[in-house]
Image 1 (spheres, rainbow, N blue to C red):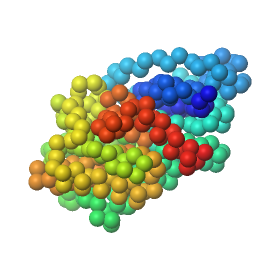
Image 2: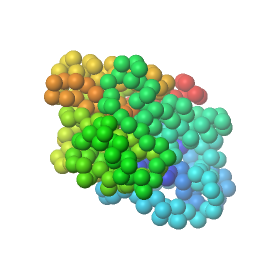
Image 3: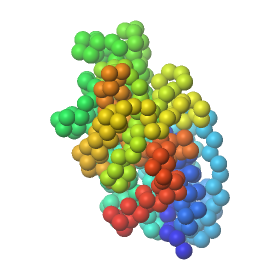
Image 4: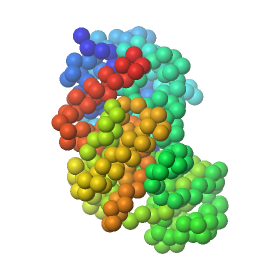
Length: 359
């Protein structure tokens, strides 16, 4: 009989819906591999299940709930509505019975994305409780989640990354002053983003000065910190690391706009070419940088770094993801497939590597 695995998804982040898509796909693959895998929402937990299961969560592994297909609607989740929907009255991020069922599992496969999952806090709780889990540890996850900290960590190592300006503890009323500072140091075009966001939510490419203030205000609606970056013209690439090896790159060509939330996850919205269309030298350089970033932040098992490649073949690192998407259209599974690793094998390798390190 296979392992008892909790696939932890959902949670409270702008990537909640994508997390369910990843988690459902992973859970199905682990079941096909012979494991007793159950999909659990980090925030809502077991509150919609029978009282007998709430009282004894381990019984979920004996009669696995049906996995329902997830259809992405292209719309970011209404997190206030999610909060209101929870019947269990608790300030905890962990829903009813979540920690209990995670504690009774052999391992937790973390399929969370974004804040409250990819930022290291869930991992820190699991470390304190002795619960084995997949992916990077709390410290590496926390540093990678903050794009500003990542840039400060890797630029001294020679990793090329766009110049930036960081604004901490700001509010929308300061948008004009922030805009003036950005124009003075970085000029326009530029990019403004929330430094701990994911799935390109809260990311704006600014081509004209009048676009800057509204974008700053929108970014600050996600939090009080803001990151402005030099705009680099070029093609978008990504390169994953799996168990100490750089996988082939993937090139991303959105059919409209840039690689934003909808273009990432709506089937057919972007053309994804793997391996990417680049020179062998560019491919080698992306792999080197992806490995250097992975090692510098102390990441584990797998990660995915994003790049811009300019017309003259300069490689520019943007950010790293410690829990990259595992949806049907996600890039890491595509890159793994390019070297003959099936989706099921990829999930199994992530699981087994975590067990070897934390089991």
